[in-house]
Amino acid sequence: MHRHIINSITFSRLLLLPFAYFYPTPLFLFISASWCGLSDFLDGYLAKRLNSKSNFGAKFDQIADKIVALYFFIELFSRGQIAIWFIILFFVREGMILIGRQFGLNISDSNIWGKIKTVLVYFLITIIYCNNYFHAATALQFEWMCLVFQISILAIS
Image (cartoon, rainbow, N blue to C red; front, side):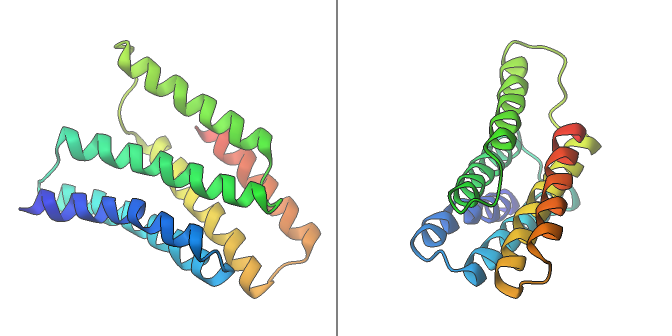
């Protein structure tokens, strides 16, 4: 029973994407990205806390994370707010890890660096949308901050 609830939380991230596509206001995108980050933490926390881990749930969570990141990265790129080189390098790295796991290379499914990378990805996405809505930083400050986050994400991963 717990697994269904946890997997439903994961699925909610994917279910949110069509709404984000058809209602792409800065506030809604900020709320959507925030929910995606929070739900990613919540499903993992509940799976551990309720001792309801499953291979399906772990794989489903990883796939949902990649789909969500791809959607938001492409959306941000279309607005000129994230660099294409970052998206390409990020997904080349993710693809290499998935292929390595499929061929049985000793690549762990989850470790602290992967969790930090995921937190930074969701944080980058949410701060961009937050700035789009609240305009808290100057364009130059914001551009540099995003660059630092993009490089950090690639370096950590």
